[in-house]
Image 1 (cartoon, rainbow, N blue to C red):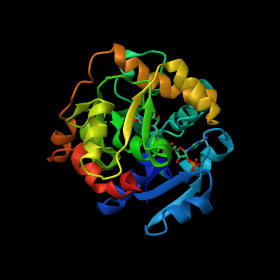
Image 2: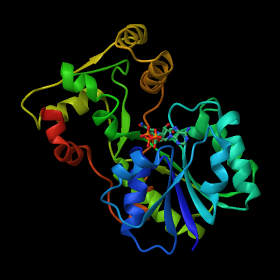
Image 3: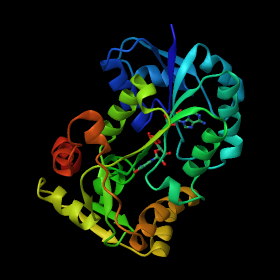
Image 4: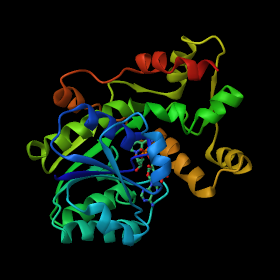
Length: 290
Ligand SMILES: NC(=O)c1ccc[n+]([C@@H]2O[C@H](COP(=O)([O-])OP(=O)(O)OC[C@H]3O[C@@H](n4cnc5c(N)ncnc54)[C@H](OP(=O)(O)O)[C@@H]3O)[C@@H](O)[C@H]2O)c1
């Protein structure tokens, strides 16, 4: 039986892709490519019909077993990986050599406009190897509020960022996973297409904080700080320099850019509207209340 390999399976998006794939009828066996099989089995303990294989982008010895009988791949860039030549080139070449031609890559909105971001380099690499690709370019994850930014919300009742009044487009990772599963299952119809996946709202952190506070009693505040102040705060709190810089780039640069473009791709592909911020906040209300 042909197999579909899902990378980043234990993370935000990979988990959702697998969840949606297992809900749909697919002729392919779904394989989670993970660095630690025992940890992954715990994460997916409620999911039947899922196989696991060891896969580490940093260890080419894991590639062949992970690619055995695979004809489609969902690929993402783990956030800590920036050296594309070292980590992605060998894997993409191995895919090409094994004649696996169908690849869905999780990129990022605006990847085509910035040649320095890793996603741009990965997109170019995939194209240069003549693979059939589908690039998904999502906007800003709503779930950043419940992951990366959650520690400050929980312990300080604050969102602290150098984002000023910049507007972000907010997308639910469930919507991204759903689209990824859909295009994996209908690859030929979407082959060599690029899809921005956005929500319908561009909102600043001031506006999002207000929305959250309208649902909870223990209010949170949004504090915009300058990038240097942010760097000092985060380094003192033990965050690595690299991760802090990524957060600064992600949240400070939008202050000088145009508002994100809103796309209707989700609606066109899935036949319904993407999650609104209001319904996301209602869904996750308990986390924000605590
Ligand atoms: N946050 C946003 O708003 C946003 C918006 C648009 C695009 N994106 C993009 O989305 C991507 C991140 O997706 P995500 O949030 O799902 O990531 P995530 O939750 O941080 O998960 C990363 C996954 O990659 C795996 N991984 C780490 N190192 C690996 C390696 N060496 N080899 C193989 N797998 C490895 C991790 O597995 P382990 O369990 O082994 O650690 C985990 O499953 C990034 O490329 C980011 O730029 C993010």
